[in-house]
Image (cartoon, rainbow, N blue to C red; front, side, top):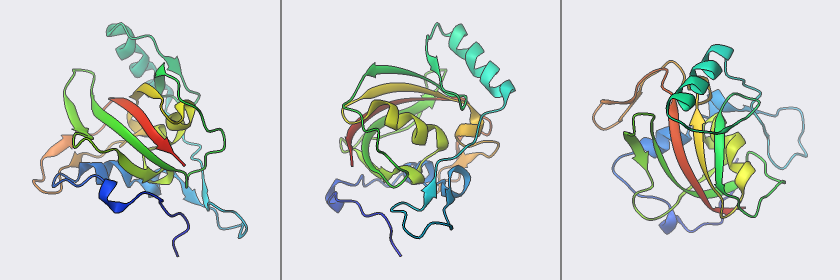
Length: 186
C-alpha cells in the first residue's frame, strides 16, 4: 500500500546512470521507523530520535573550526548554516514530498554527488538520511543551507559504493558537507 504519493510528474525525477542519489535517499531502515499503533495517521513514520555520539559531535566541531566555518548546532549533532531562509513549512512530516537541488561532498572540497542534471531530486523525507530529515524543514521552500553531518546521521560505519562500478564513493565514518536548496516542499 502506498501511503504517500508525489504530485510531481515523473519527467522531473532525475534520470542518471549513476544511481548514488538513490542510495543516498533510500536509508529508510536506518533513519525512521513505521508507526504501527495509529491507523488514522496520514504518515505512518516517526522522526528518528537518533543523536550523534559526543565524540562525533566534537570531531565535527573541530573540523568546522579548522575550516573557519561558523554554523549552528542541531540537538541531534549536525551543524548547519541557513544561507537563505525559505517560506518555511512547520507542518512537515516524513511523508512530505521535497524537490531539492544539492551537492554532497567532503571537507576537503571533493564532491561525491549532486543534482547536476538541472532538475531537482524529488523524494519524501522518510527516504533520506536523518540529518536531511531534520534540516530541510528548517529552511522550507526556496531556502538554501549548508549542512555539516557526522557519520551516524548519514551513512555510519559502512562504505557507500557506486552500484555500477563497486567503487567506494563515501568511505565509512565520513563527515559530510551538503549544499541544499529546496525548490518545493509539499
